[in-house]
Image (tube, rainbow, N blue to C red):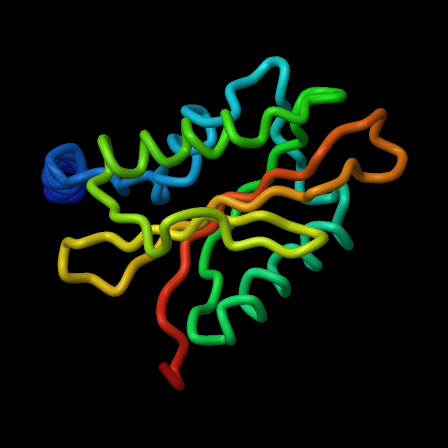
Length: 161
């Protein structure tokens, strides 16, 4: 007899769990942007353990170039196809995806750049302080058979902004 109340409770818990909303996947904006601008297989997603210094340097450059008014809250990196120098095409694809699909607006009329990197920056007009950036190295990474590092970033205003 003691088993029936326990079985009934178990059935209720299972029913409640079945009707619960599942946990939503992580924000896929950067993944979708990357797939639109630098599709695989020619370009390849760079696992976290590869090119750590180059990735950290790019994140620091993005924040420093933007005068620390923004901070990177999410990032995704790709190694461009070997020998690929068509950075304008990649930037154009990223710009089209952000403006046409995500509703972002470019923050400048062209590339932010220096001798090491080039970057586009977009703002989302949905009332939230969110930004996206696309950055690429101006030169190939050593030891990568002429591959450039491409970074996709989600940014928010820094505390001092």
